[in-house]
Image 1 (cartoon, one colour):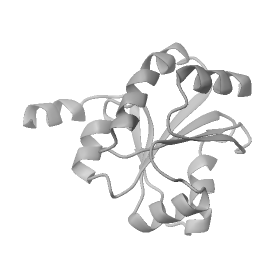
Image 2 (tube, rainbow, N blue to C red; image 1 turned 120 degrees about the horizontal axis):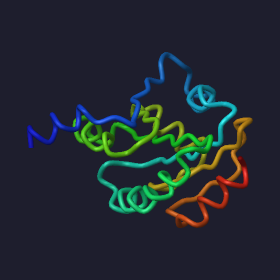
Image 3 (cartoon, helix red, strand yellow; image 1 turned 30 degrees about the vertical axis):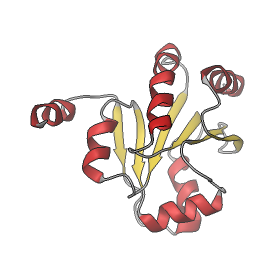
Image 4 (tube, rainbow, N blue to C red; image 1 turned 180 degrees about the vertical axis):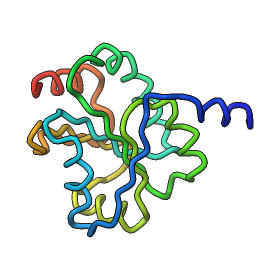
Amino acid sequence: LIETIEANKKKTGFTINETGEVANEDLFASIISKFRGKVMLVDFWATWCGPCQKAMKDMKPMKEELADKDIVYLFIAGENSPKETWENMISDIHGEHYRLTNTQWAYINKQFSIQGVPTYMIIDKEGGIKNKFTGFPGVDTVKKQLLELL
């Protein structure tokens, strides 16, 4: 286990982001503002969520195929995902990662009526939410919508 953790620390392709000091009502806008001008797939997930992990595995070939496109993959988890587990898992999930506090997570869930994980949002280049899915809608659906916004 220790060897795995140490090996994961050397992996690349993922970035851990901090939300900084921002009011809850400005939180999501603050997160996505960093990536304005790009199409975004936002994935609300948890480390303990089997369907989340399966969807990430299913999307991996799509992400590799679209690697040259201007798409950002944002992964947002909460404190209900233990920090050590989260840190160990994200090394295999290429994209931008945020881990919210319980208060932030609760606010975002209420703000966007997130009923469970995984939940996905597709965001256009201007920062507008184009679609939201509770549960994984499938690779073909996600890919089609991302490509339409490029």
